[in-house]
Image (cartoon, rainbow, N blue to C red; front, side, top):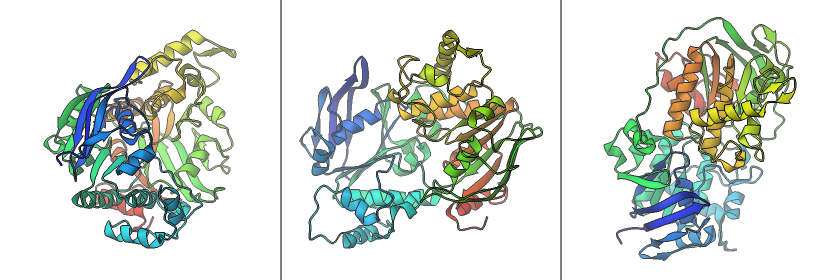
Length: 499
């Protein structure tokens, strides 16, 4: 058998938009094949067709040499296709074993699931305790649960969507060992990722989509990261560089900030202190679930902070709500896009108004100037290459990456004196990531202070001149990057070095 899966001339449209336009690709058995493209390039639609979540308008597929047209994910799994999604589908209050059982289609009453889980765990180096509660697991361990659940279905093709977006460097290395072993055992892997250096390390074949069309098949190991990115976006990338790192006075400080989390699976914050100067970009690295959510709630103003723990331009802002903080030129981009950063059932132009201070060009004495709203919304759409049919499209109609670009642009257009952003390029493609990074650098060059909280270590190292690590609710001192900085950051992230 030459190919595990063959896709021939697949087309899928949504109204006038062709999400997939006559796409053909072939995946060999035991191969690790990358699927690359910008946000909105058609990757998700194609994967959904393969996995049975969508049916193509035209074209055909062959699986193991025979016709294949699944009407549901259940039918796809029956054929031997499994998928690990970017956002895990696990119940935090249940054990590992209970979560795995719930995800299996064919459950034998006489099956010893604990024994099976341990078997796959040992076979593929996926260290996990079947009796541990998922809510107590790290993000990397939760991903291992998802993979084991897929492996217990004995897949011949494993689809992985952004599998390393929330992992530490060591967890990425461990995952790659597992995936290579899977491929050696005959399982084909379709690997979707925006992290192009990882694609180069792992994959021997790549299919690149742009605007719903196939534009390139290549061996990613024959190209550098920039070349792959430029194939995806169809143009040259702007080189990232700060024109002049000139910092001013201290503008924002966090002083001995502590908080007990109200969430059963949350993380308490312990005595966090940090100072940010005008014109500086400060980064907080860390694996998800180490107190980032609890810290952002305090910084944004969704939860009140103790007196004198948050000082902005000499003023205690800990008791101010988000709107009052925006009035002072503190702006925020939360990690959760829908429902937190944007209202799903409101148009983009309406969402533009949500983060406006009382005095802005969009309102005058409480009266909305819709002409200016439309103008500024369109400016964000154009400047940040947000793929949408109009400024009135509902926020929930955009892909995650395009909504992220809109949210970043909405805040940056206001030229904040302080911008606090969590996961600035979560789920965006290489070209959009480059654009967002360049915009953040330009903002800092103008004298604004930026605090970035990110799980993406490459992003932190690219942008930030001062780096801290948040681990188990405690914040490290700034890491000296010239003294084995990367190794120290990695050790702090996994808790193998003291704060």
